[in-house]
Length: 398
Image 1 (tube, rainbow, N blue to C red):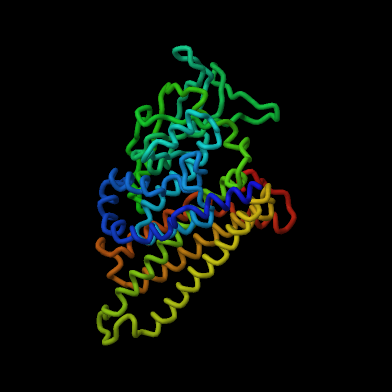
Image 2: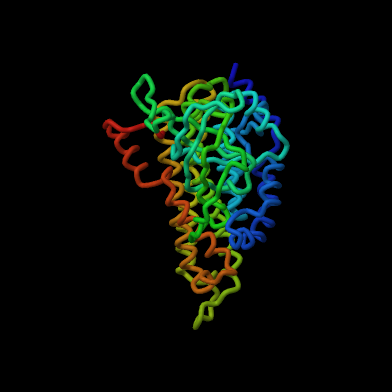
């Protein structure tokens, strides 16, 4: 019955991937502006939110577009073909909004349904939350600092992972013996930004550090247990860390496809120094273009196969460890495939690719920063490999 309800919601939604393809030109044209500002221009972030890209996976009642993880991946990939930075901010906003929706609090539902609302967040528990009361309202007093705050400077509401602590600063343990994780949702005016985002790629994401100092957050704006309590719809059964990793891989694949299309535009006109042939006529180009196409298409094939399998499982009930394993393996593999393709394209383009006016150099930098995210890092190979071999493995982040 839940599966039928979910399919009914999705079938009525506009094709966000098609809408994203319509934005590719303007996103590419404004990429330099975002890089110089080291964050998305606010009007661009507002447009992405109004167009539905900042809460793609939330159910309709929670202010979202109710699309499947497959459609979410396709939309992010299409945005990244225009520019990786707005695509990155869109997947961060989407996963942050879904994390907030786990609370099922009426106040959170209201903020998620506000027209044009922009969310952001960092799941890593870098803060401390202490139970407190303010003006008769029960809640938490929070202190902390978070890195990789993508899109937070554009946002209305930002979540930050915390551990629950007592008044002496000691962690409060759950009945199972581990620390209790919370995710308070901060209003924009509670954040203090630290100018740390001086980086090689994904400059336009505005992923600077932010902190809160003795910020009071009412209890009804705090999600407990990183969203493990809501199971009423398939999207809440879908692996949360898998959804995060899907966003990274979608950005990488989109950037790689964009770089290849940029090269196709270049190859027919450019003649390397000392050559009578254009790049498009050279044998080395033929080989490396074919290899780049194969990398992108192979990476995408496994990527979407794994997402579709995980979504089919979530529509029916819990998602198995084997399915989660394959999803995380596919996302990391897709990022590496995209990187290989972009590296080939960058080298093929020669000196042209080093100039700032070349979009290929921006895509090269963006993809190489995406590879550094922990969700698609080298530890994924070890964890999934252990599972294939029947060895004990920490599956908490699958």
